[in-house]
Structure formats: structure tokens, C-alpha cells
Length: 282
Image 1 (cartoon, rainbow, N blue to C red):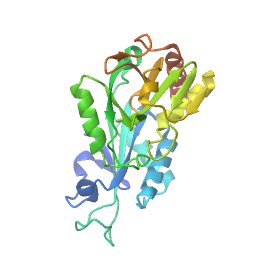
Image 2 (image 1 turned 135 degrees about the vertical axis):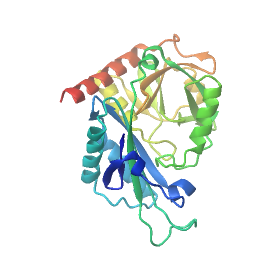
Image 3 (image 1 turned 120 degrees about the vertical axis):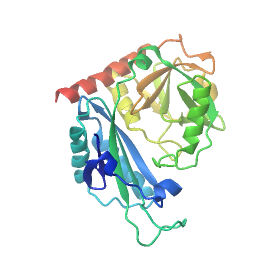
Image 4 (image 1 turned 180 degrees about the horizontal axis):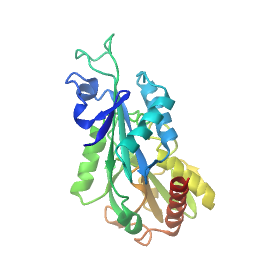
């Protein structure tokens, strides 16, 4: 049997009980994180927890545990489940109370985390993936990693029905991000990525990518680019915790570059892999 973190205790999965009046279930009133684990070692845990607490603060949800305590519990959860390579799913809701839109006066947050074993999608890294372009219909606080994911779910479903791995989203012709990733383009030896604001989630893997770019001498411009500019990019990359650094080789039938992962993408992947190697050796 597997184990889950339930508030401040690690229990058997079957012991976790979620009330039907939980505001996460009824309103999507909560925030979450997905954190990668390589060979039993948690990757960028501090960065994910920092964003977790920041997202919670932005929706006026007080997490009743200090970061150090939660960090310790998550590492214990990985060890208890004997997790090799996979991820942690962590979420907190405002808790259970009579159904009303404003916050109930007396309510306790409910925190849950579980783990899942899954291998790295190496074929995607090597061969690249296809994407489609869709209008970004989400709310205007994409900087908060909220449980409200219906917009991304619908976009991801349409991409799936088109035989694509990801949906690249835009607002009035300006590329924002993917349905479940950040989007980056490379042109003339410069990496372009949307600036950090309320239109995108400041991805943890996005930040690792920017660090990798600096380390290999690839200049970065954090500025939004248009759909028209996207078609001129010689390399397109999506990043996320589970997708890592994945090359996009085709967008709605338009071949990106040579139709194969580009030279800069390969260098970025190599630098990312080097960081993982350092992590698991330490």
C-alpha cells in the first residue's frame, strides 16, 4: 500500500478522507504544486515550496505549517513510498465549510500530498513533439498555481484530439504559455520567453532553463512574442516539471526549423541533465 501526506501526518492512502463540502472540491479554492523526484532525490524542492506559499498568500490562504516542516514531511513521504523517479503532487484547499462564496469564518485548510512513479519521457526529448495553437481563455491571474484548471484541461483535450502533445496559448495574437507548460523560442542565437507577469505562471523549470541558457552562453530576452514571430523561430521549446525541456518540431502542420530538435535545444538539455546528475550524486 502507498502512503500520503494528510495535513501534518503521513498515513496510508486509504486513510485520507476528503469532505464533500471541501472548498477545493466545490470551488477549486486552493493551490497546488507538482515536484519532480530523480532517483529518490527531490529536485528544486525549495523553489516549489516558495511558489506554493506565494500562491496561497495571493488567494489569502494561510498554510498552517512552516516551510521547513513541510519540506521534511515531503522528503519523508518520498522515502516512505520508496519512490525512485517520479513526482510529488501537493495541494492545499481552504478547507470544509457550509457552501458559500465568501470565506467561512471558522475553517481549517486541508493539505494532501501523494507520489507517483513515472519514467522520464526520453522519446519526447529526443524526437520532439507536435503542438497546436489555441486562444488563451483562462482568467487573468495565471501567476497563481490554482486548482482551477478547466481552461487548461479544455485546451489540453483539444490538443489531444488533434494528435498534439501541447496547446500553445495566445491572447490577441501574443503567445502566453502552454496549457501545462511555459513556451520559449530561439531565433538568431537568442532565447525568447514571455516576461514574468500575471499572464503566465513563473515555471520552476522555466527558471532552470534560463539558468542553463546563461551557463551555456545563450542570451535571453524575457519579452512576449507574437504568433507571427513564433513561426519564424528556428527552435521552439516547452518546459514544465514533467516535460522538462521538450522540443516542439511542428505547430499545426508548420515545421519548426529543420523538423528536428535544434542545436541550442540539445545544449540546454545536456546542461539540464548535468544538474540532475549533480543532484543524484550529492
